[in-house]
Length: 69
Image: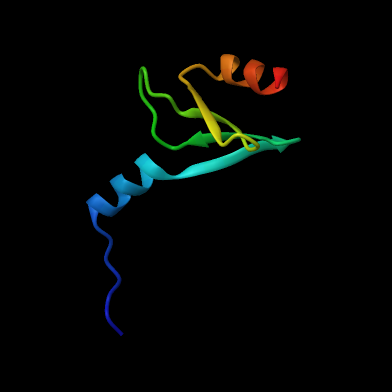
């Protein structure tokens, strides 16, 4: 059996692109990306009916926006 190898570029791509669903309800979703660092917009609120995304660097602002929808 061939030994399984991963590449650093594949891991980097995964970190930059992967989104995890944290919460959803009534036409909205709150997603969190794995990518982290100062000034990185890692909290994403999606409005599903109009296919719009709003990105946040601060989790508190993202949660407030999600709850206000």
